[in-house]
Image (cartoon, rainbow, N blue to C red; front, top):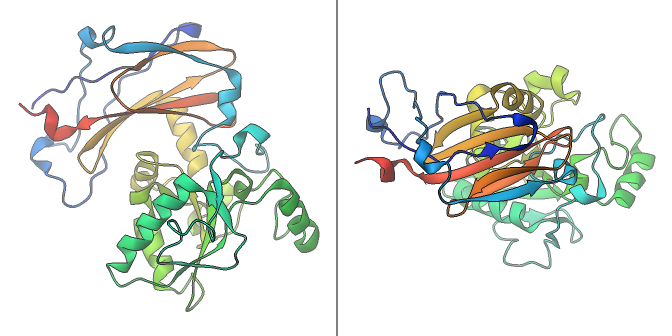
Length: 304
């Protein structure tokens, strides 16, 4: 089997090093499995020569625990002011984003980045004959959440700061024809949303973990490869963040593209090394740590 070298994120503070693991990768059906061994695993070998090359130091501070796409938001871990996405836009006024789906009202707002990903989702669903999507709710400010909480009560609405909608990462999706639990749109979302970085946040079989009843309309953006890993392992965000803590580093392939995900506990400011010429993202978990996701080259580029 051909070996691939990859960049490794090196933790400096607290003396913690990321643990190298091999995990079962996530594939779409059209990925060429000729590059996978008989056990459907990729064993990633560390090339020590790459550790010091093309790396730059980046300081992580405590506030980064509360920013990013992987924040756990529930009754224990509320949204902070710094957790709210900075690219919130009105979808009705953003014509380039509001395409191929309808809005429940003209005031609906959402993160621009999340809206772009949803637009791509809708476009691909239309190509398969699923074309009656609507957005019923998106970003809600704390004042609006407080109003809903007072009007609807705690059985239906979360108090301000404790809803994922308050961060701009979640949206309630509907069908113009029927309830999502029966609609083709609901079925398509459940099967395919992960391909675009979304998860069905409150699935039917995980209510004991999420503490929220089944909501086939509520999707949450976490990004790739995280949505793919959760889909493959049939786990929700709470379980996924625990999984990353336990493993410390996970490497996967999604649609022929390799990702390495690292978890670091952040009790104080510290410095990590990240690649200078490879895309990476940093997100807090809203609890006690940060996740660094390195997006590496396509797998095919590693094959000699």
